[in-house]
Length: 171
Image 1 (cartoon, rainbow, N blue to C red):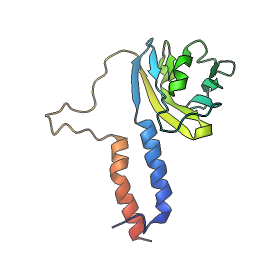
Image 2 (image 1 turned 90 degrees about the vertical axis):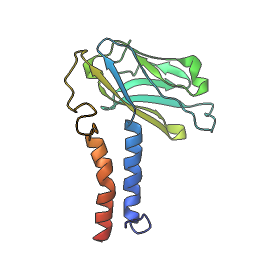
Image 3 (image 1 turned 30 degrees about the vertical axis):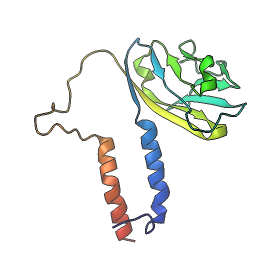
């Protein structure tokens, strides 16, 4: 059996994979034209420092919104988001840095990250925007063959222990 004590070189890999997985687990679905809330709430026990910045980025590292010293700053905002992304300054003191994205389009489908570097906080999510048409399901409904869907993410998580054990055994 492979344990971390026997495989120290995989410890960092596993932690990174778990962090990426946790950040990507939140899926927000919307239709073209909707307004959506992209949540980012700092709820750790430690208080926020008196001066800090929050950076919202998409998967291309484009600036969705910067919050500098408790003020939304839209000058550096990517033009794709200008006038469509707003935050809620009254909620900042409670650690809520969520943003609202208005009139979402299919090209807004992306992963997004809220980052507060001074305290090492990151929150990631994925926005999926559909055109509103109903598409045919690829997975059969429950009751026909068990109803369990195997997604690429669940397959990767299922195979991870096997890969670690195999690597440790062959060292």
